[in-house]
Image 1 (cartoon, rainbow, N blue to C red):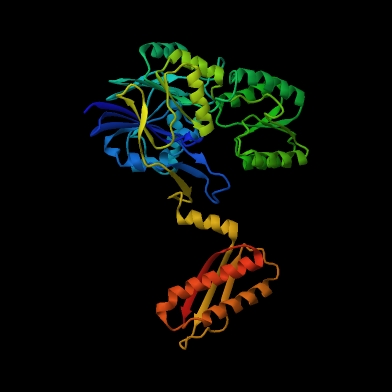
Image 2 (image 1 turned 90 degrees about the vertical axis):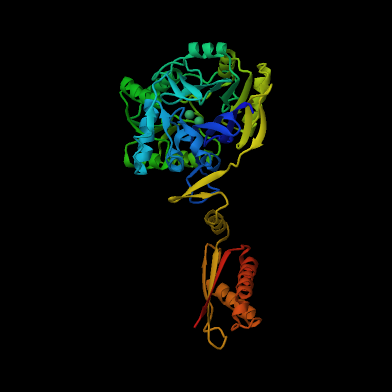
Length: 501
Ligand SMILES: [Zn+2]
Ligand SMILES: [Zn+2]
């Protein structure tokens, strides 16, 4: 039996968000595993009442005795957001650079878990030994402090896991991209590069935080307003830019995060607010909410500046010219695109082919890729993968009854009938009806009609015969749904209570 080197994404491949990647090394019956990143995705309106989604860790939970630790590339939520949800099932060591470690600590504090014995701080550009893996943190540039690429050294070859990055010649805060080290790593030979695909459709370069600063200064000068609120997503350089520009221009500013409610509340509280600068990306899928907020603000006479109208945001991910740099430095034998929807990843495969990479491999969540042995990496098996939804305090599966019922409720409304059955097997009084979320204006008429239909159905049953109870309930549910569908066009979630008195 030969040693194998394996890569398996459990999240973030085929979607942007909830990144979670596994690497394994060893003979098939004795493999050691590491997790790289453990993030969340923010839920949209299609899952009512759920804010966070994270990858189902079941596959690695089963292997937790052979798990050496969780290694984190940087502190964005799509890379660390699920850690406090998943860690209790793994109870392994966590490795992160100082800034990321502070934010992780906060997450565990919120959950009242003392993580100090498990959370290990790794210095920038240093190496961590997790035998048989040797993991070197290589400083890159992105849109948050301390973004790290990971050189994962194994006895059979090296992997470069880029994490999120771009080439920013002037990141303003934090260190510059360690291109010298990346070039050396390229010379040492890289079996596979696992690479960010977010901006693969964008030509040119992602741009620099310094460019944003220069333009933000112009915008603030032109605005000549008293208070400007900027919005950003955990981008410390951008916060610094906001303060810098305020000081230079003598404007008063207030900063709020990306959260729209917070922005609106802050806008209203500062009665003398004149302008809002959204110095962040308009995320596809989120436009509706964002434009609704823009509309509310402009209606109140507040000027809105966004990336639609001004150059006040740069992406933290590599455009094609940035990717070219990385490819030229690393010269990988294989590229596995991650951090993208399927369309990004296919385009990234095409890009890798253009860049003469011998073996680009397209993967999706759950694919088990053998990087070694073999002439080229290939997907040879499938791990169970999926999503867990944070529903209140509980994590539930995608097809959980609670989620199904709420989707059903939110789309179709609800009808409940309670029927009191006398010892003689008759209905006592009338059925008690409750209906919610249905477009019914003539309530009494609707109720009267439904009562009649229910009574008709009950007459076809011998109500004293308990053996028929299940059939009776099903028949009554069907009556309620049919009647409601006829009257309103909706097929509601239906509940029947039979009470024997
Ligand atoms: Zn990031
Ligand atoms: Zn990311």
